[in-house]
Image (cartoon, rainbow, N blue to C red):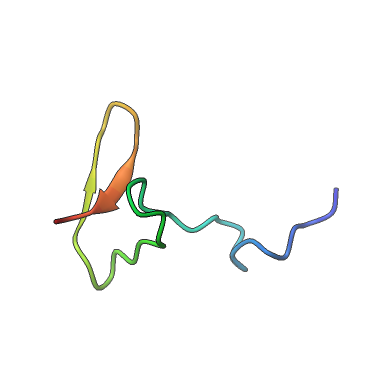
Length: 44
């Protein structure tokens, strides 16, 4: 199986906001999550 190098280098895909589809950065911004389905988005 060949690795896809377009993904994050650490082997994990980056989280994306389910509303605006931009990458989430939990270190510098507040993030909300819906626990039932696991969707995450920026706090408004």
